[in-house]
Length: 394
Ligand SMILES: Cc1ncc(COP(=O)(O)O)c(C=O)c1O
Image (cartoon, rainbow, N blue to C red; front, top):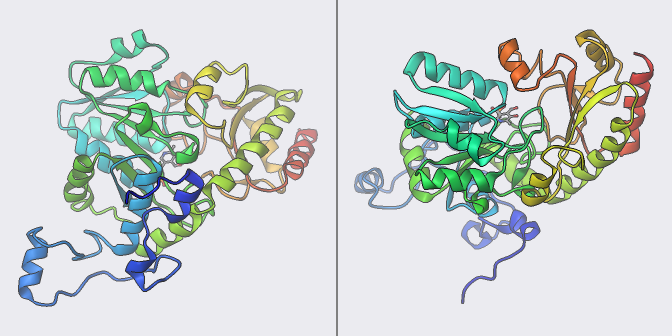
């Protein structure tokens, strides 16, 4: 009998794991081992030759990690997944698997600072070029694709300006040309957005963020077609080696069970704080996908379940005003990263996007007065009161 398809809230707890295969253990066991023993030399030979299934060495696969990968493939509606030691290990393994010298990457106008740094490195050392595209219409995207474009790389919402890209449109245009679309889905998690269902090919996560949810792991994930995932597993993951530790995979398996509950609360808290910030006299501009006046509000409604837990805003004044403001916060912590239980605030121009040259930063919309708030799970009234008292001091 075919297994009944469960809802997301159920899959996030049960998918990818079978208690029967692990002595009935309710929770996935932690296989904290570097290597696996073979019954005999012939078995070792068969496993290395791919003629027998089974684990060999934890850089090539590990049972705890496999449970996480199977679960993520289900949640992101992909065929297979791979876990990495960081979001950047995932981004670099994917980009290096998709490109070769002479190729071109078309990137959304705004990406995480280290993704920008990686693209610069690929250009300078390996001759793989890139351009940034607004991707705000069919015409813009079509015009920006070059004959040697090997992949389209999209963050949506874009970090930290919260602009959105219409993923269905991008996937349609790319597939007509046989170009894979890679989406960094870190800001949404599969609970809010599933790019593969919209026609995109590969999803990347900094699992450090909402997937983990507890601020205690650095990790990355890649989800896509089985064939692509197998290629990455055999090449840029195995040979560069940015694999996740079994313990970190175990922590992610623990954290992810509450993803829908956490995302609902992050989003609800953010919606309250948006209402407070949008009308504050010391706030200049505000960027939140749930803002009906947001340029991409219609895209948000089309492809995201909720606007999410991140709000960016500019403060009236200078870079120093913004710094002074965050220095006065008490409950809210000054820290990069996002998606944790704790509310975090950071100054992208001098922190996450400091590596991006000023001119490029301005094109991405990252002003010196811009702050990014990752709304946590505390009572929203307490977060508001903390913001209020800090505003009063500038
Ligand atoms: C959107 C996005 N992608 C990728 C990364 C990189 O992830 P990691 O820090 O896990 O390497 C980050 C980190 O902040 C991010 O915000």
